[in-house]
Length: 392
Image (cartoon, rainbow, N blue to C red):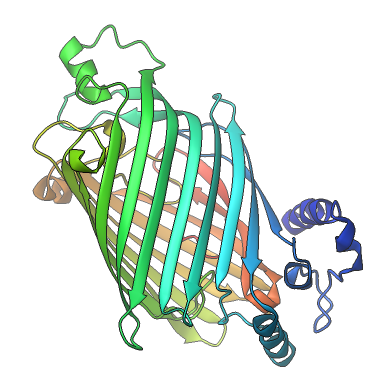
């Protein structure tokens, strides 16, 4: 039933293009529904990804995203050859260019739009990522920073942000060194009544009396990447360490630093069974108050964004992927997170746990592109997500 819904939406979107009618949407190898030929043969081909937003901190709504895969004629011919010879298609032949554009809205009057592009050169020797977004977002944040309050702050944030990174491979190794740049400018206001809170605390919640904060950073990236598939890996590792310096000298209003360390691991157990593990740690350090949105939070399926924030946050998540057929995959996952105002307090905090299950369908075999739905249960809520590739 879920696949039929996805198929109907995808087909209806694709057939709005007059050139799409000449493309076969069924794979000649297995006869199953597949948009790989459309993405490869139509110069304007894209994969529309409709998604129901069920993020508890944002409300319920709809997001529509277009995914574009760019490759030259030689790369397309090579992928076609591999796709004819293997049921996995060209899953390991990542296109040098991937673009995404989308917009969404929810019932709490949130509206946003975004666009991004990832490109590689010299056979993945150089990686570049750029993206931007504009939004009028209403989102719940929860009291932290030892304010002694159990308060959900309904915050309106209107503004824009940009991000770009560039990475260089070291010789022929899986190690990359790179730089990042981030910029975010927002206007903040509280949607709920804070009159019962002492003024000094409400001001601190909104970020040192600054209701129009700008944060800007330069960062360093160290990454080890040996994953066998960009979208849906079944083996390999991706360890990333990022350190960002936010400084007034870069055009922002605050001076602070953030550290992010993530390790993604996939091990094949059987030919059709893989085990995934994701570990992450994030911290922020500042000698003065910074905007509430600058603090990391437990980021797991089933747990609302910003529900558990802190200056130090760690998470662990495992995932079991069972490839039932060459087209269909089932998965189960569970995760746990900790958040605190210091490293010691983080380890003393209560674990916040979530679990769930989902499925993936090979929507474009020649690209190794999977699409499906995850349903997750957290401490307070149950949510479901439309995903391209892995949920990690």
